Amino acid sequence: MLHQGGKGVKIILYLSVALIAVAFFILVIYLIKTLKTVQGTLQSLTKTIEGMEKQIQDIGTETAQLLHKTNAVADDVQKKVESLNVLFEAVKQVGSTVQTFNDALAKKWTANEQKFIQAIQWGNAFFEIWGKWKEKKKRKAKEGVEDGKK
Image (cartoon, rainbow, N blue to C red; front, side):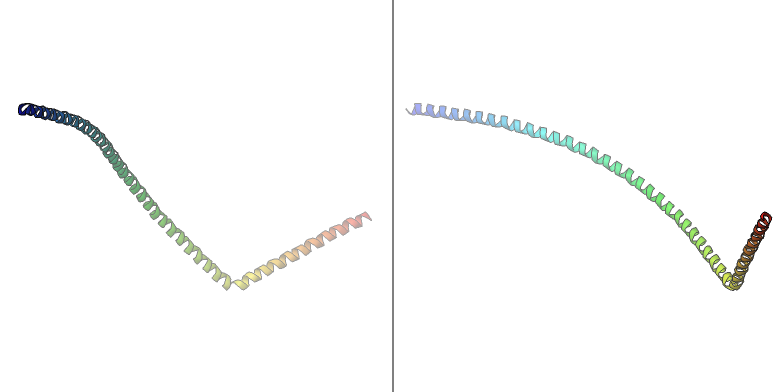
Protein backbone atom coordinates (compact mmCIF):
# COMPACT_ATOMS: atom_id res chain seq x y z
CA MET A 1 0.00 0.00 0.00
CA LEU A 2 2.72 2.38 0.70
CA HIS A 3 4.07 1.55 -2.61
CA GLN A 4 0.82 2.31 -4.33
CA GLY A 5 0.31 5.41 -2.20
CA GLY A 6 3.72 6.61 -3.36
CA LYS A 7 2.66 6.07 -6.95
CA GLY A 8 -0.53 8.09 -6.40
CA VAL A 9 1.47 10.89 -4.83
CA LYS A 10 3.85 10.79 -7.78
CA ILE A 11 0.98 11.00 -10.24
CA ILE A 12 -0.54 13.89 -8.33
CA LEU A 13 2.88 15.48 -8.22
CA TYR A 14 3.37 15.01 -11.99
CA LEU A 15 -0.14 16.26 -12.70
CA SER A 16 0.47 19.28 -10.48
CA VAL A 17 3.75 20.03 -12.25
CA ALA A 18 2.01 19.59 -15.62
CA LEU A 19 -0.84 21.86 -14.51
CA ILE A 20 1.65 24.47 -13.30
CA ALA A 21 3.53 24.18 -16.60
CA VAL A 22 0.27 24.67 -18.61
CA ALA A 23 -0.75 27.61 -16.39
CA PHE A 24 2.72 29.13 -16.79
CA PHE A 25 2.53 28.58 -20.56
CA ILE A 26 -0.89 30.33 -20.71
CA LEU A 27 0.48 33.14 -18.53
CA VAL A 28 3.48 33.52 -20.86
CA ILE A 29 1.17 33.64 -23.93
CA TYR A 30 -0.97 36.38 -22.37
CA LEU A 31 2.14 38.19 -21.23
CA ILE A 32 3.52 38.04 -24.80
CA LYS A 33 0.22 39.39 -26.19
CA THR A 34 0.24 42.19 -23.62
CA LEU A 35 3.87 43.05 -24.38
CA LYS A 36 3.14 43.09 -28.14
CA THR A 37 0.20 45.44 -27.54
CA VAL A 38 2.43 47.65 -25.38
CA GLN A 39 5.09 47.54 -28.12
CA GLY A 40 2.51 48.63 -30.75
CA THR A 41 1.35 51.43 -28.50
CA LEU A 42 4.94 52.57 -27.92
CA GLN A 43 5.64 52.51 -31.67
CA SER A 44 2.51 54.57 -32.32
CA LEU A 45 3.55 56.97 -29.56
CA THR A 46 7.04 57.22 -31.09
CA LYS A 47 5.57 58.09 -34.50
CA THR A 48 3.29 60.67 -32.91
CA ILE A 49 6.20 62.25 -31.03
CA GLU A 50 8.30 62.34 -34.22
CA GLY A 51 5.40 64.04 -36.03
CA MET A 52 5.09 66.53 -33.20
CA GLU A 53 8.83 67.23 -33.32
CA LYS A 54 8.53 68.02 -37.04
CA GLN A 55 5.52 70.23 -36.41
CA ILE A 56 7.35 72.04 -33.62
CA GLN A 57 10.33 72.58 -35.92
CA ASP A 58 7.99 73.93 -38.61
CA ILE A 59 6.32 76.21 -36.09
CA GLY A 60 9.75 77.40 -34.92
CA THR A 61 10.76 78.16 -38.51
CA GLU A 62 7.49 79.99 -39.20
CA THR A 63 7.85 81.91 -35.95
CA ALA A 64 11.37 82.98 -36.89
CA GLN A 65 10.17 84.11 -40.34
CA LEU A 66 7.27 85.97 -38.79
CA LEU A 67 9.62 87.63 -36.31
CA HIS A 68 11.91 88.75 -39.16
CA LYS A 69 8.93 90.15 -41.08
CA THR A 70 7.66 91.89 -37.94
CA ASN A 71 11.08 93.45 -37.37
CA ALA A 72 11.18 94.60 -41.02
CA VAL A 73 7.72 96.16 -40.67
CA ALA A 74 8.72 97.83 -37.39
CA ASP A 75 11.85 99.25 -39.07
CA ASP A 76 9.74 100.51 -41.98
CA VAL A 77 7.23 102.11 -39.61
CA GLN A 78 10.09 103.72 -37.68
CA LYS A 79 11.54 105.23 -40.88
CA LYS A 80 8.12 106.52 -41.90
CA VAL A 81 7.55 108.04 -38.47
CA GLU A 82 10.92 109.77 -38.70
CA SER A 83 10.04 111.16 -42.14
CA LEU A 84 6.69 112.33 -40.74
CA ASN A 85 8.58 114.10 -37.96
CA VAL A 86 10.45 116.05 -40.65
CA LEU A 87 7.13 116.87 -42.31
CA PHE A 88 5.60 118.01 -39.02
CA GLU A 89 8.64 120.18 -38.37
CA ALA A 90 8.23 121.76 -41.82
CA VAL A 91 4.52 122.39 -41.14
CA LYS A 92 5.44 123.92 -37.79
CA GLN A 93 7.90 126.24 -39.52
CA VAL A 94 5.25 127.22 -42.09
CA GLY A 95 2.87 127.93 -39.22
CA SER A 96 5.49 130.10 -37.54
CA THR A 97 6.08 131.98 -40.81
CA VAL A 98 2.34 132.55 -41.29
CA GLN A 99 2.06 133.75 -37.69
CA THR A 100 4.97 136.15 -38.21
CA PHE A 101 3.34 137.44 -41.41
CA ASN A 102 0.00 137.90 -39.61
CA ASP A 103 1.72 139.75 -36.77
CA ALA A 104 3.51 142.06 -39.25
CA LEU A 105 0.27 142.64 -41.16
CA ALA A 106 -1.56 143.43 -37.92
CA LYS A 107 1.17 145.93 -36.97
CA LYS A 108 0.96 147.57 -40.41
CA TRP A 109 -2.82 147.65 -40.19
CA THR A 110 -2.70 149.25 -36.75
CA ALA A 111 -0.10 151.79 -37.86
CA ASN A 112 -1.99 152.69 -41.06
CA GLU A 113 -5.52 152.10 -39.84
CA GLN A 114 -6.57 155.72 -40.25
CA LYS A 115 -5.17 155.81 -43.78
CA PHE A 116 -7.07 152.65 -44.68
CA ILE A 117 -10.30 154.02 -43.21
CA GLN A 118 -9.81 157.29 -45.09
CA ALA A 119 -9.14 155.44 -48.36
CA ILE A 120 -12.32 153.40 -47.87
CA GLN A 121 -14.31 156.56 -47.12
CA TRP A 122 -12.90 158.24 -50.23
CA GLY A 123 -13.78 155.14 -52.23
CA ASN A 124 -17.34 155.18 -50.87
CA ALA A 125 -17.65 158.89 -51.62
CA PHE A 126 -16.38 158.32 -55.17
CA PHE A 127 -18.92 155.56 -55.77
CA GLU A 128 -21.70 157.73 -54.33
CA ILE A 129 -20.79 160.68 -56.59
CA TRP A 130 -20.41 158.40 -59.58
CA GLY A 131 -23.83 156.83 -58.89
CA LYS A 132 -25.46 160.28 -58.62
CA TRP A 133 -23.74 161.38 -61.82
CA LYS A 134 -25.02 158.30 -63.67
CA GLU A 135 -28.50 158.90 -62.30
CA LYS A 136 -28.43 162.56 -63.39
CA LYS A 137 -27.25 161.53 -66.85
CA LYS A 138 -30.13 159.04 -67.15
CA ARG A 139 -32.62 161.67 -66.09
CA LYS A 140 -31.34 164.13 -68.64
CA ALA A 141 -31.47 161.48 -71.35
CA LYS A 142 -35.01 160.59 -70.32
CA GLU A 143 -36.12 164.27 -70.27
CA GLY A 144 -34.65 164.73 -73.72
CA VAL A 145 -36.60 161.77 -75.07
CA GLU A 146 -39.83 163.00 -73.46
CA ASP A 147 -39.32 166.52 -74.89
CA GLY A 148 -38.82 165.04 -78.31
CA LYS A 149 -42.13 163.18 -78.13
CA LYS A 150 -44.19 166.29 -77.24
